[in-house]
Length: 377
Image (cartoon, rainbow, N blue to C red):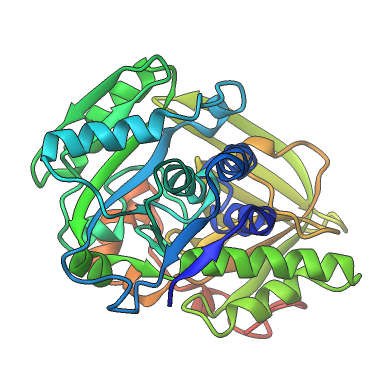
């Protein structure tokens, strides 16, 4: 059923999107401010339910919109605001067809917000789903592509009014390579329109209801904090009836070291966390998003499952570019939907795709219930 997203929803949505971003995807705060301004000028956004054929008929023409680049760059290089609409219009012009709706490329971080910005500015509805089910650093790492939708033709747009059209046919890896180069030369981040497809392909390939999920998670964290409750428990309860049904507490401690650099259009690095009692250490590796978590010598979670760093008291998600020495944190793992764990999906965004020499083991297997003091279902 169609529903309406208002400015009052955005703080909770941004908080939930930061959680689903697994530390990456860009801080949604900047995107939230842009969407709030656009909604004040143009009104609320209509959200379509991908499970409802009346909302999403087979022939509805959909284009994904997003930002790409290093989250560290976005801290200083704030978008002008009209770039994603420019990318959309340029792609429509090339295709000779006008979009009927837009959809998030990913539900994590700022890219939960960019399609809402496009929707508010253009009057298009946005679909309640996405192509990553979290955040990933590269454009081919989408369930759209995993299950047969070409990402190109696509358009990359910069903040000086420039745009680049890229068409690599069915080669989504080549599309990512060329688009990354364009984004780097546009200052390290850019706005994009990609994966044009009919509604039938959206229904077949998208992770459904992830905007709703982000909103639910952000609200759960806020309400737990307001009621002096347990944010991690509230997150687990919010996830339990969804496709992301398993949550495990992986570690509690403080940030002891962060090594971070911006390379080839990505924020890459490692972080170390020391337990409050000093007895063990957690190490994470990230490429925009956190990819693997190792406690002492044991891998406890790995991509595509989610690894999320939360502020220990408030449950507020912390992005990889915001990690700082001394922060007191809880690190949790969240299982991904089954369609992100198939052999086809792991061939596109499993551990080996990031150069990690570890196998994918589902979170609920790697950390069985009862393995930690605060583990959840």
